[in-house]
Image 1 (cartoon, rainbow, N blue to C red):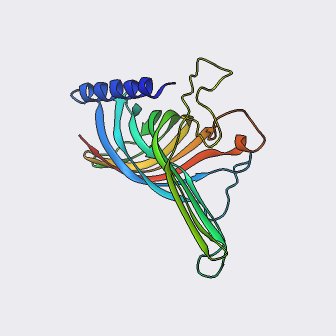
Image 2 (cartoon, rainbow, N blue to C red):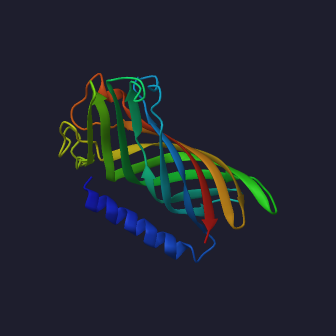
Image 3 (cartoon, rainbow, N blue to C red):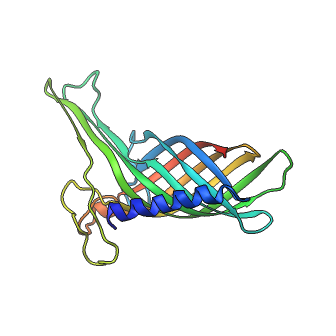
Length: 232
């Protein structure tokens, strides 16, 4: 999917959110802290010391479907990624640190159950998401036998078209797959004006672009987030 097409989709969603906000549906401005990571094995194991702190911000719309059930969608600017370190900068002559922090526009589609409550109530929800990479940085720094090095560059994304099932446009070494998809889960507390939630995103798409291999097939996004929302 081309970035322009995905951006247009997100824009349409935002316009729809603004129109729906004038009805009974609840429009929420949400932001929070993401604790992002990347799996390294098929059973979901992570490397040590590789959780990355980043952020998210966006608009969500809860559309009532039944007395205690709503359908939630929206558009969220979502930070993901990971960081790794080998060696100790304070004691080792050779060490390095690498950070990858891509940002996506993520569109969730969650079914949310709301418990009864007069002033505040609990909610729990889950559903799929699709996301497109739009920005981000890769940073590397370290030291080899006393000689320091440092680099920083913008992340390059492929322009994968999902209609071409056996080909990924723009793929190559050092390029990240633009499209991500997976499942969300959330639990939280809400009042008439605000929400607080704990969320988890389970990515199902490999991160690296290009052909499949026994190594990069294992690398998928995982994001634990803590968010606050304000109902508009």
